[in-house]
Image (cartoon, rainbow, N blue to C red):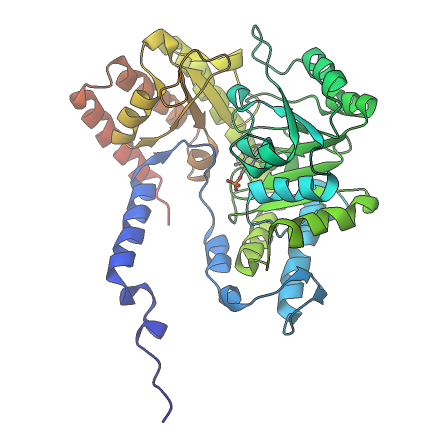
Length: 419
Ligand SMILES: *Cc1c(COP(=O)(O)O)cnc(C)c1O
C-alpha cells in the first residue's frame, strides 16, 4: 500500500499555524514600519518566488556544467544566467555567484588567494569596516595577520597617506576597501597605486554601494580592484547571499576553489536563482531611477537632520547610508534605536569614528534610504522621517511623542503599501 502524502505536503504554511503566525507578524512589521537599516531592502515578488521555488530540492556541487551530481541541466542554466547577468551589470569577465553570504565571499577570496598568516590591510570596524575583513572574533582574524587603517580624525574620511604608511609597514598581500558604515566615495585608483607599490592585491567589498556602482552613481571598483565582493540583498535588492567578481583569468581557479570547497559545500540554488532575478531587475532602466532616488533621499535626510541639532559624520553622504552623531543630543545610540523602533522606525545603533563610548551604547546611529526608496518614498517623505527622528530624540522617554509619531508613521506606510 503506498503511503498517502501527508496533508502538510500540499497545504503550504496553513499546515503550520505557529510558524505562519510568526511569518505573518514579520510581514505586518515590514508593511507598517519604516526600514532604515542599511543592510536591508524590500525585494520583488519575482525574487521571493525564485527563492521559494523547487530549486530548494536540488543539490549541486562544483561549477555550472562541471557538477559532481547528475540532473543539473536546469541548475546549470540558472547559475549561468546569474553569472552572465552579473558580469554584464558590472562590466567584468568573471563571477562566482555561489557564496551563501557576503562573509563567505570574503572568506573564500582570502582562502583562495592568500596563504595562512599572510598580512591583510583592511578598514577598522570602529571606523566603519566590516567584521569579515579580519575582525579578531572571526576565522579571518585568526588565520591572517591583520593590520587596520581607520579614518582621519578631522575629515572622518579615509586618508590615503595613512593607508600608504601602514601598507609600507605591514607589507600586506591584500588591501581591502569597503565597509558597513563608511558613507563616502572611496578612491579606488589611489588604493590600487598603494597596492601596486607594496605588492598587494586590492579587494573591494561593495556590499553597500553595488547598486550605485551598477548605475554609474558611485566610483566603479574596476579596473582598479583585482577582485570585488558584494552581498546581493542590500543595495542590489535581491536574494540573500554574496558574489565575487574579477577580470584576471589567472585568478579564476583559486577564487572558485576558495569558495567551493574552501568555505562552502553544495550550492544554494534557490538563492542563486534569486540572484539571477535581482540582477535582471538591476539591468532594467528603472534601476537607475531607483538609485538616483536612493541618493537624493539620503542626501535630503542628511541635510535635514543637522537643522534639528544632530551631526552627520563626514558632513554628508555619497551613498544611501549615513552615520548620525547623537553626541549633541546627549542620547546614546542604544536608547535612540529602542525609542525609534517603538515609533515604527527601524534603525541600528552604530559607533562613530573615534567613538569614546562602548559598542553596546555607542554615540551614533546608522540610517539608510534603500528600503524606504523601494517602497516609493521621495524627498518629502524622508524629510518627515528626519522630523520624527528629531522629535523622538528630544526626549526618548516621552511616550506621548512616540505614540503620536507611531500613528503618523503608520499612516505614511499605509499610503505606500508593500506586498
Ligand atoms: C553586510 C556586509 C557583509 C556581510 O554580509 P553577510 O551576508 O552578513 O555575511 C560583508 N561586507 C560588507 C561590507 C557588508 O556590508
